[in-house]
Length: 196
Image (cartoon, rainbow, N blue to C red; front, side):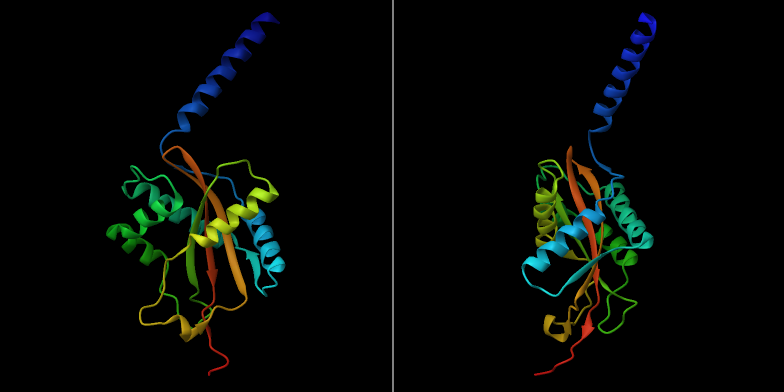
C-alpha cells in the first residue's frame, strides 16, 4: 500500500509538472464557452430591451473559429509586450500576411446575401473565474472589442441593417501566459427596409 501511494504521488507530481509546462507561451484551448456567452448576451439584450437574439453557432462555425485561432497562433505574429485583448486584435489585423489568410477564410460579406454574413472577432481577458456574473462582463468585453473580419469595401454603415440575429462561437486561447475568451460572431447585412 505504501508503494502504491508513492507511485501515485510521483504520477501526480509528473502531471502537475506537465500542466505547469504546458501553461507557458501561446496555445488554443479546447474549452467551448459558446452556450454561456449566448446566454449572457441574450440576458443583456433582454435587460436593455433590445430585440436581438443570439444563437449558438453550428459545428461548422465552431470549426471555423478553431481554424482562425490555429492560424493566428502559427502565423508568427509577435505578441511581445501585448497585455490586453485590444493589443492582440491590433497585432492580428495589422499583420499583412495574416490579414490575407483571414480574408481567404472569410469571404467578403454581402448586403442582402444570407450566404455571406459579416464575421467579427472579439476577445476578453479571463481575470476571474467563469461565473454567470463574470461571463456577462466577459461577453460584453468581447462585443466591445470586436473587429470585423470581412467587411465589404465601399459599403457604408447606413447602407444596411444589422438584423436582429447574431450567431456566436466561443473558445479560449492562451497568449503570453494569459487566457482569453475569443468569440467569432456573425450576422446578416440586411438590405435596408425603410429608406428615408
